[in-house]
Image (cartoon, rainbow, N blue to C red; front, side, top):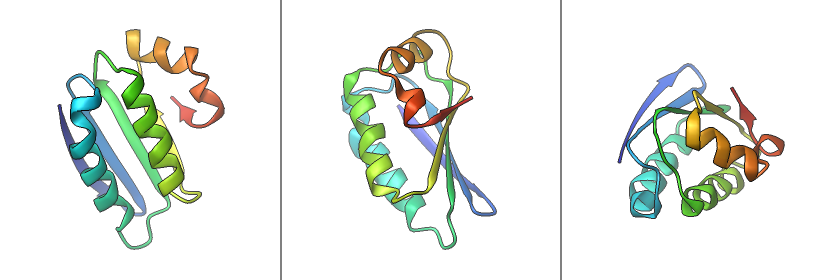
Length: 99
């Protein structure tokens, strides 16, 4: 799993690539911590277009990010297939905007 971070004004865009599982927790935390330290950050967009699978640990990582984001808007984009199903079953649409 890889994560590429880029910034567009006050928005951090994290593009995930690979299976989003527990083995990825260090990389994900490092990338999100770095993004959250960006001056003026108001939005975080996580792009799932290159992710085909996520496990329950990934759900936990997203919840922890939501806590650490302290009110910043988090949007999950390009969710498809199994990833979309997992997010729907977990009712993550009530916590995050999913597009």
